[in-house]
Length: 215
Image (cartoon, rainbow, N blue to C red; front, side, top):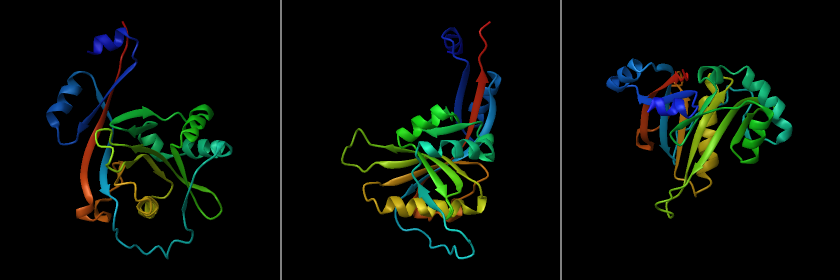
């Protein structure tokens, strides 16, 4: 399989493996793959949530749909992002990971396709960036689509929960959505903030990569 990819000019091969699947990890490592990062995946039912007091926080955050004039600010934010660095500039989308092109053309395309949200404070300063994807059930058109948070980047670790509740408030008010999925760096432990009955699925994954060289 890898030889075929090399012949076709593919430069890199990647794989997602459950953190608990030791056998698959060993098999990939024998093939020359190495782990790039660990991430957590949550699938949460939209519904009732825990009430959290945000009164100690001096500035309230809000979601903002970016426009092309925001691209320079987004590029500056991502250039200093620890999350982007940890994820090797990748984002999750429908069980695949893609390169996050932090360029004017790449961001313009995402903005045009309504794939990016900004988290801003009261003075319109960027506090976070989200990449979103709406997934429709093609096998059952009567089932409500779900929201996938493909990339979740916040400047302040302690405000992730505030943003998650902001997202849940936003999409709960739009009754056409059923679930919201989160792809998060391993350091973000949010399990205690989701009600047990609302978390349909949780998994820990390793992301493996291998450079392919055509000899």
